[in-house]
Length: 352
Image (tube, rainbow, N blue to C red; front, top):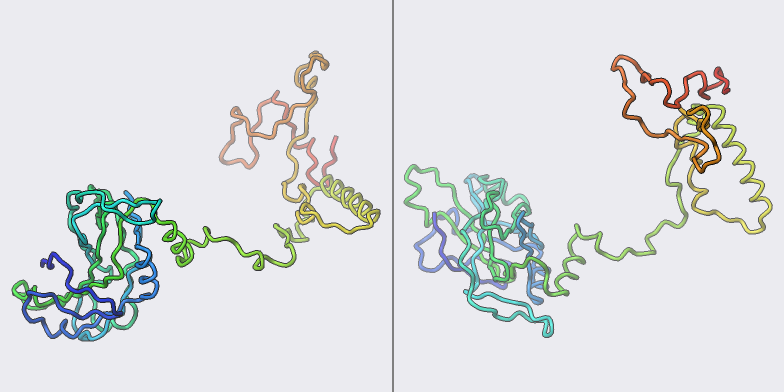
C-alpha cells in the first residue's frame, strides 16, 4: 500500500474528514470514519510559537503526544492505525535568536528513508478503537539514518507534517486490488513542527516544561506546598534498642543526659536538624573491632616518631578468606583484629 506523497487535508478544525484528492471512491467501512484531535488547544498554542520536536540518535517521544478520538467505524471490522511524516517543503531552516524567528538556511538535505509507525494495538476491531482515546505515545523520532529500531527518521532543522491513516483490514483474498479504497488519511495543520536536536525558541522550552507532566523536575518548587513541620528522616522502632549491645546503649544514654542538661540551661528552645536524626550508634551495627595500640602490632617500635598510635581496621582485608559453610570468616593471625572473646557483644561477654 502506498499513501499519496502530499498531505490529504489541512484542517484547522478539531475534526478532519476530507478524503485525498485524485483517488477513487472509498470503502464504506472507512468513508464514514471521523477523527478528532485531542489536546487541540495545546497544539494550537505550540503552533502559534512554532512547534519544535526533539530528534536524537536513540529516539525521542513527541510532546504534545499525538492523540485522537475516532468515530464512525464498523464495530465488527478490523482496522489498523498508523502514522507517517512528510516534509512541508524543500528547505532547511535556522533560528535567528536576535529576531526570534525561523529563517530559510538553504535547500533541504536528501530525504530520509520513508517510514510508517503502526499503533501497537493494530489490528483491532472498530469497537475497540472507538471505545477510548487512541494515543501514539510509543512513537519516537530520530535523526539516525542507520536506525534499526523502527523509529521515524527525520532531518534536523526541517519542517514536517504528521499524517494519520485508518486502514480497513480487508479479509478478501484479492484485497491488494482494493488497497487504495481501504484507507483514509487525516492531516491536522496545527501538528506540524520543526525537527531540532535542541530547542531553539526559549518560549517553546518554557511551554513544554509547563505543560508536560514528565517535566515537573524542571519547574520551580512552590514553598507553600512544603510541609509545615519537619519530620524525621529516619524512623527507628523503639524495640530496635533492645538489639544494641550494652556498650552502645551506655554511650547513647550518656549523650541523651548531656543533651537534656544543655537544653534545660537554654532559655530559647531550639530544634536543629541533627536532633531529628537518630544517634549514630542506632544506625550502626554492633562493634566488631576496636583500635589496637601500634606497639601491640609491632613490638619494640617507638611511639613518638609521628606514626599514628592506633590502627583502625574498618575495611575488609584482601587476605581474609571465608569458608562458605561457616558464618564467621577465618582471620589470619597478626592482622591486629580481635577475637570474639575481646568483643563487646552482649551481656554474657565482658570487654577486656
